Length: 327
Ligand SMILES: NC(=O)c1ccc[n+]([C@@H]2O[C@H](COP(=O)([O-])OP(=O)(O)OC[C@H]3O[C@@H](n4cnc5c(N)ncnc54)[C@H](O)[C@@H]3O)[C@@H](O)[C@H]2O)c1
Figure 1 (cartoon, rainbow, N blue to C red):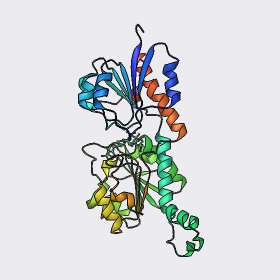
Figure 2 (figure 1 turned 90 degrees about the horizontal axis):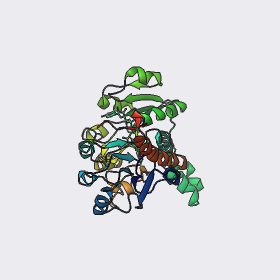
Figure 3 (figure 1 turned 45 degrees about the vertical axis):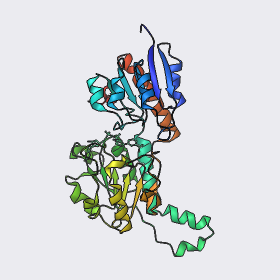
Figure 4 (figure 1 turned 90 degrees about the vertical axis):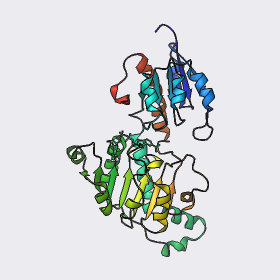
């Protein structure tokens, strides 16, 4: 390489990823150290800094078309994660920029998180934990009974990296696994122990659990709204560790309050952080986490490393195609 490539790291990543740059004479970098989803990066600062950089790593901060257009030298955007709905794809394509994702890093952590939410809700974690800690051990006889996963029907919506990790865990609990993903063949689904369903609106009527693992886009926005929620089984548990906008939150809150479904586990919200007056935050039938499904120490290390490795591999012409988003 002739001159050092300049890398802008927007929002800090795991130190193990930064070591790949520290030890490499071909790169120099700058970090915009904003706390993810808490401290917004000033778009004007971003526009200025992006002008000089060849590569950029980004977590959840929004990269608008206006910002990307300032990256006159920018060749690669490396997403720390696999969802890329925070990035303007048209501007990325127009400027001939390669967009990469950490495709091998986070599926296990998210699949484990889904099982954690499913078990937490079905086993009444909130109410039993609270009962014992508040000195009401004897409430054990009065509190509602919990639910087994054994032989229950679960629908995995979106059968990519995470969906395919989740099925193994569900089968471990001897659940009946159904899959809705129009882009995956029934043979593939069968080979992994699931059964393909063709019509989402028909399938959800017999499910005891539904977990979402598809991208947020114009077609999937508000996919789960009242028209579907009202046809679900009353004992159904709905998990969303994909993206907030896929479920209509107002409809979900109404469905929970009206007893149309049993409970929901949400790692993601249509607005992040959610407004303090979002009614779901106060709903006891909801189990929440702050978009932290992949926040295991192991996964953060893998994501940090893969984010930077993707940039280096891009400049060394050895980037694996599976890491590149087709624009
Ligand atoms: N909570 C988190 O922090 C977190 C972490 C990782 C990923 N995610 C989200 O999870 C999503 C899934 O991640 P992945 O790595 O499994 O992605 P992936 O691209 O491997 O799989 C997505 C699957 O969704 C399917 N799909 C697309 N449109 C669909 C539709 N309308 N109906 C049904 N299926 C559809 C695709 O065919 C694909 O198989 C990502 O898009 C991302 O937004 C969230």
